[in-house]
Length: 169
Image 1: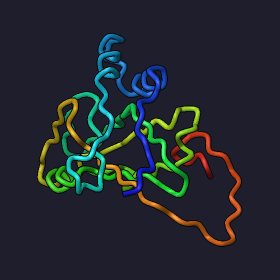
Image 2 (image 1 turned 30 degrees about the vertical axis):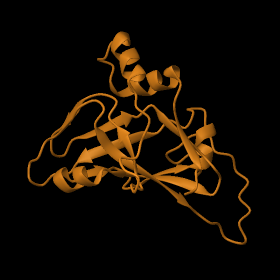
Image 3 (image 1 turned 90 degrees about the vertical axis):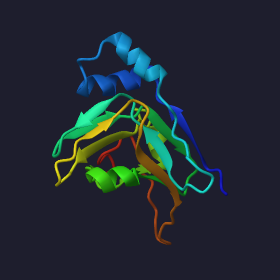
């Protein structure tokens, strides 16, 4: 098995900035506690391909509702690897939990961005059966899988990333 990556927390400042954008109702004390309790992604079993990402705080999504979650996590990985993010299979099956961009793509150079490569996830409860999604802090909601990738023989990309979500085009 190739050991090609490490997960880290982003700095408290970067986490606070992203968190405050969507959740101004939390106190500074709450925010510090949430940051302290962030769990790095882990695999559940020896045979698991996916690393579970954990909800940093409890949330509830009614059908059709979306939420942007600052995970507080960044991924340092070797070149030629990418981290792909998907909803946890059970949540996708039960509540049609969807990532709004369908699959999250975390490139190896994202780690060095001004936002420290902070992984954010915008998810939607797309239930057609009226199922409400309730997750406790620390519950798995995403899974990340590291995959090797290749490039074309003619590739001469020299750009340097600074950001995510469309920062390279």
